[in-house]
Amino acid sequence: MEIEVLDNYKKLSLKAATMVSSQITSNPNSVLGLATGETPLGMYEELISMYEDDLVDFGDIITFNLDEYLDLDPHHEQSYHYYMYNNFFNQVNIKEKNIHIPQGKKENCKKICSKYDKEISRAGGIDLQILGIGTNGHIGFNEPDHKLHVDTHVVELAEDTIEANSRFFSSKDEVPRQAISMGMSSIMKANKILLLASGEKKAEAIKKSINGEITTRHPASLLQLHTNVTILADQAAAKFIR
Image 1 (cartoon, rainbow, N blue to C red):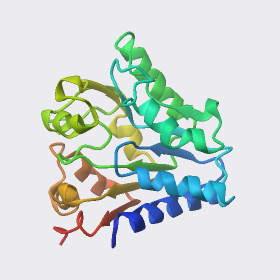
Image 2: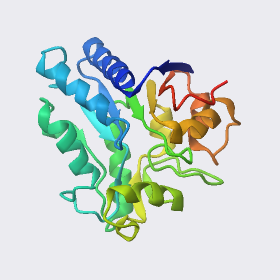
Image 3: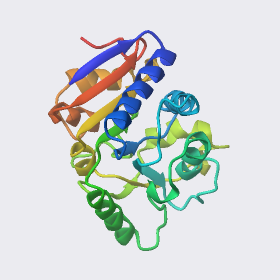
Image 4: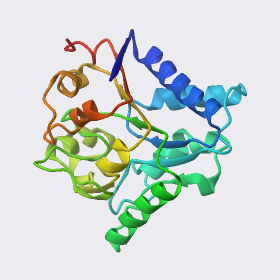
């Protein structure tokens, strides 16, 4: 596990974008695992700038997103479909057929989840998986539990996750209680993992991920078992790292 502490969020975002760009340059057919949330936004902005400056070409990459809220319309401003298209896909030259985001439908959930895993497998697995981290240590929507699901699955969101995400909705009551999430198997099988953390509110989660015991009660700690993980954290998020 490699840990790099950046001075601020801007430098973190640029470093993350540079690493993604390098991956695509070395393998234009790369399969990228993508994350949503506040932290990756700066990275996506930097990647868009690189594309506009002809420094990176997304024409042949394939993407798989980590998760999606259950039963939230894809056009809803807080859906992860909307997030990805609004903040990234619509502004670069990625092909529609190469974009994969879990369908957040309660109907046929098992089939949807199984199909998603098969699509990842058919693509050859993920070359570079980008992750954020929740204050409770979740990655994707793999929440703390006595055990974790290996495959793509439906998740009952933890109360602190609902509380944290309520700032994006008009009220806490509007936050979906369930989501579909890529499981730990696809994440841990990625050739490389890049985890981004920004802000003091993520400091405790980062400390436990790096210095704590490996436990499903803190899902990000399982990354200690992966052979190629880079954590990029700004000064605030890294304040408790030994």
